[in-house]
Amino acid sequence: MNCNFNRRHFIKTGAITAAGLSFVPSYSKTGKISVSGNPIRLGGPVPVNFSDPSEWVKAVKYLKYSAAYCPVQPGVSGELIRSFRAEAKKSNILIAEVGAWSNTLDPKETVRKDAIKKNIEALQLADEIGASCCVNISGARGEIWDGPYPGNYTTETFNMIVETVRYIIDQVKPISAFYTLEPMPYMLPDSPDSCIELIKAVNRKQFAVHLDPVNMISSPQKYYNNAAFLKECFTKLGPYIKSIHAKDITILPKLTVHLEERRPGLGSLDYAIFLQEASKLKDIPFMLEHLEKQEEYKLAADYVRSVGEKVGIVFEV
Image (cartoon, rainbow, N blue to C red; front, top):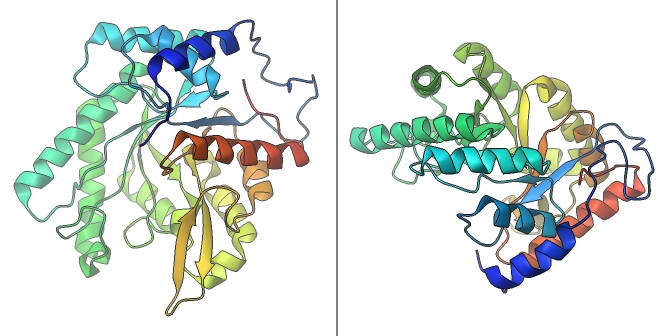
């Protein structure tokens, strides 16, 4: 990710912004009570690596986020993990997720074993630092870790996903964090129904859902009826959702079907419905991602907040 400002500038301005903030979850800055449910915890990447938890808090608050991606990677000291956890809790920041991006279905057994080890370590970190979840994709049955392959949809692959998820969770035995699989357009899970099917098959309390509706919009029908699809996602998956990725999507006049991810506000996703449905859940991070510059994240956050204001959504501070 490219960023146009450095740590010194970020901390200096962030300290000013963070001063004097009061945290009243049910109210907006004007004192208006949300009319659409719970406050939304908007978050996104923080454009500097931090080893000082207090500096990290200032950076998150400077961006007006109340949720953030995990600020450290597996392997750091337990003392540092506990410090970040304590500072996050004190400052009303929800650590959304620890990414474990790797291919636990890789056909090469050595690669697969390394990926599973990475997921175990990431889930352990998520539990220790107080993150909502550890997230990965299920993986692919080919060389490209997130690629489309016919083997992604076989019964054998489904069973492998189930056994792998069980193994990861059983090795860690997390107390509070959940292990989740982000849906993708060409691997399992790829729909609300396949998410439910996997939850039932895995049969582990700490297995849950990471919602990314854009990743499941893979046809013109879903694209043009995305408001109904969003409602379907939340109706079927609501009790299992632990984190949300907030993106946008557009369709291009290219054959055959050509759908592309966009920054929130530059596509056709019904953000009014998206936010209203998300506000029915409590303390679920609503996370921006996949943008190249911090300026784009600001534009995305501004758009999300502007839509929320129009429909009576309050954002946690």
